[in-house]
Image (cartoon, rainbow, N blue to C red; front, top):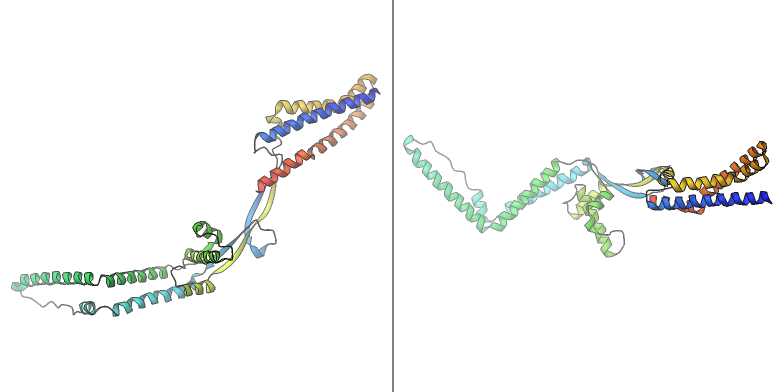
Amino acid sequence: MAESKLSRSGLLITLLGFAVLGASLYAWAQTSPLHHLYYTEDEYKWVRADSSSAPAVETDEIWQAPATCQLPFFVRATMQAKAKLKAYNDAAPEEILAWRDRPARQTPRLLPDDLLKREQEERERDIAAKDYDAELHVKYAEWYVTVSKLEEQVQRWEWRLSNVVDQRITFSEARRRGTDIGDYSGNDIEQISARRLFEHYGLSLLGLGGFPDDQQQAIKATCVSVIPLKKIVTRTKYYTQIWRWPVDHVAAFWFGLELVLVGVFFSPIARWISTGDAQTLWLDVHNAVKRFATMTRSFLRSKFVFRRYHGTKESTHS
């Protein structure tokens, strides 16, 4: 009877100690989102989609176009711009053609006495020529503006031709730099339009903008290769901050642990005091240690710890 009472008393003290420890652990875990019993950190790596069977965390694409493939299209575009400028110049108004094709003035050999007079005549002719040229620019302003634009186009294509290099861009980068384009993942008319607009935008980021639609589609089909990528987990590291619990909650932790130890060894110590049998004491202590280890494992596998662990893991991956 006395043995049963001692066992029940020790069990109650032990349970009380575990209750104190559980409450302390719960309070410690709730005081800061940085307090985790267990948490994980994943290391990631971008690989080609066909090079690994691991599940993808994210997906992406690489768009690339080699310079050797782009070059013929830029040569053709430059020649077309020059041909367009030449055709427009050849179709200039008659007054402009006559003024542009006027014979160059020849400067005769002059005697010293006629030099000053000749210089005065030349200045007057230059002023008259500039005035007439200005009159033509006013009269045919639209034509001159068009010629200026065509000349700028030729210069721009010549510059692009001289700077053709291998181009490479990721799909995600194009999306970040073109966030105003909208959603292009669906199949309705607006989303198909957005997808086409995004393709044009992606090609412009590759340095392939400015071509007519048919040529741009030809460049895309001929030169642009798309490489699917995926982000996979290469390694998962496991961590714990349980060591901070005794430091942050000193009083509650050590009081609870003291109650647990007193409860576990309460019955053997009381029996040893009453009987004085040291051999039985060590046997009881051994059994008590085994029970303490079993109870500790049960506590760590309890629903509270399970919820904390999985909640932390989900929040880490989210």
